[in-house]
Length: 461
Ligand SMILES: [Zn+2]
Ligand SMILES: [Zn+2]
Image (tube, rainbow, N blue to C red; front, side, top):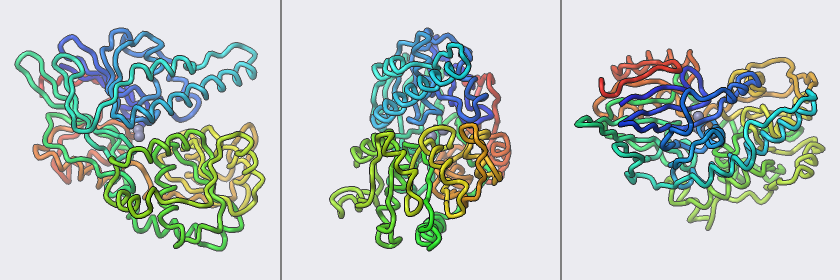
């Protein structure tokens, strides 16, 4: 009965851990490594296990850093089921189709540029094969994954369908309960419910993305957004919102809808410039039974989700390019969330050198990504081979993050009455160090920071 840490150990992206119980091997997540080009090359490395010998995958949620290597796993021979919450299955299908499409385009581009054939990380056909192996499960329903291993998904409050995974293990006369936090949302996140409390556990694998910081209070964040949208300056230029297609895009639309009158948003043209975010929004609006109280009430009062009369859903490339001709009054929500690809890069290229431009950073930005450079306040950035001076104002709106901060993470941990030992994953070394100290001080927790390859003997706990 062992767990081995593989991806998202001592880093944020590439979430993947291997559970070995009673001769069966189960993966918790199979995520993509994201960041700089060099980091992303590591996705091509062989897995430290035989894909054909994996019996099942349990997926915490649909973000690519958790599911993005599934097509690769299937390509290398994995034929078992991928268990995920129902909404996660739908969102995963959308994300993987897009990731595969981008991988094919990227390979084409690099083949042309280098003059030698570059193979895509995986193809659209390989991405599609994963869909056939997805098996949807509801929250709070316990099901068997392999003999001696059963799983229960509970709400993680991070994006729609996101789960904390409770894993119940039995081998011989031995029983253990492992809790994998997946990505944990902030408490009081719009639309979504709070992370569910957990009874107890023998050991916890816990994310620590923002374990080293405190987000601004939600009221302050809303005030900050209000200031940005109502300032006369904003009307002179455009407002760019790089956003992950799943999660942030819907939350931002929800906030804009909710404050439409109050913030005078009729002055703007609002664009959701992402076919994938448009698809994901549909899934969001189709799962009202997963909403929190406020979203349920607003939906009832409005006869639907809060609407933006001036929202344009921009699917086609031509529509997206036309946005670049607008000099003022556009609010553009586009991916990718870390600005290392996608349509937002074009909008940044056209707007960053203008003082009137405002950029709203709403999510985590990995080292090496264009978004991280902007957050770091670099004077100029390279985009498509050009040096673009940064004259725009960059706002980091931490309160919109999909990840809980130090306090949220500890609050969730405290729902486990027996204070189990913790293994921190999904965090940069500094935040892990800070959070380990914090959690130990606040809750007396025994905290470990595994490196890739670390093996945890669950029987010995
Ligand atoms: Zn996530
Ligand atoms: Zn993640």
